Length: 506
Image (tube, rainbow, N blue to C red; front, top):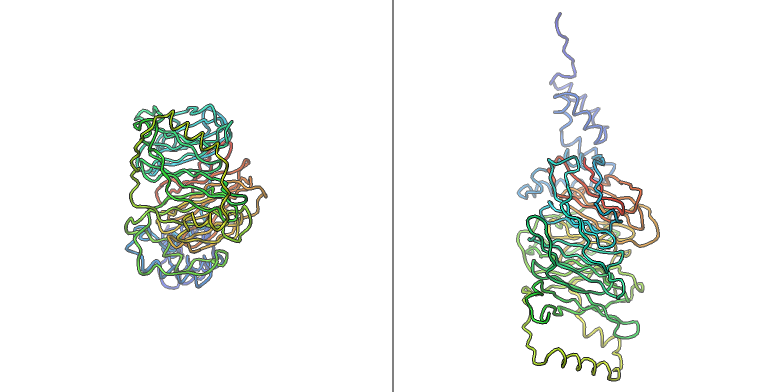
């Protein structure tokens, strides 16, 4: 009996035309399923114009044309070489599934998570200063992570905390609020190859402020001071991790710059970045954040990988003059010195003489507080600023090094560097009214962010098209979302809630 060949497997023009006419009306997810039927359907469904058209309900024709032109002009850039319309459609419609749930041995409610530069080590910080270190091993189990250290690092911290890995060393900056003091304490921990840790440095900062690494040997802390009624300043200090080698712990802290707290807003988010080399194409963009609703040429310039490392730049969340009192609704930026060598310190008196002199100064009658303008003149004006429509609750650097993503109570914005100009605005879904500090993250394909406000939802967008991908819900508040380095076909997403660290994959 002769085998009857299915006419839809033929490669003639009429079959292709009919299939293209049918596939024209399919969504990206339906196109993906159709491409799995047979080789013929796969060839037809791989046409760029079909995938480009499937994104039409989510993105305007102008944005599609800009994306097409950007892709054609950036094929020499590594992050764009593997891009195609089919890949963009797959990213926009990918389905995330939870594969595992990581729970530290201590069992205390979780507060913060940090991932190192290589994406192979996680630091989970829980209440009561419980630290848990996890190492990545994709061949170990479904989760791909296993715990290598569980340790309580302090008996004096409260129910908050933060952690950050050093840029190029197995070194961790970790801290939390002291129970009986109005300040935070930070420790620098060094780890051996078998994960024994030792404290090499201690530092303090004002409540609610998180430090940042400058390099493997220096980090910054923030110290707020009420200089006059309704007038406060914040001093950014540089700290050396070689504290144990300095006599009497002198010379390890030095002021870097002083910031005037406009609108009485506390500085809660900081980020130190290496600026890319500027190019003539880095133009200006004068729209407000909430007007940048879809990708455009300026936004795609912010996604290009930097060609070199220039000067360091400090970004903080703060207030603006005339803004809402106490609300950090702006990003502010300062250029930092190229060298972070600590200044030499020469002591002529001993500890007793210096302590006596300090007590005498404290006993003197207080001076008349300076006025607002005089105090502002003593501070360093920002080199750039970006007003935002809502309060900042999260901040992260884009891997290109040319922009940052900032999560607010109403949406997430992409802001260029170093001019701090808005490039894209993505609205967040509904959430509770309370402010919750969150930790967003971004790679070349996705940007993810918890909603905040005590919500358990994490929202995902495709970076290049700006298309909303998914909202992952959890029973307990979501605090952080991370995108560890993964193969292009196997993206992973880590979501930290107060209960556990959830591992999600496509």
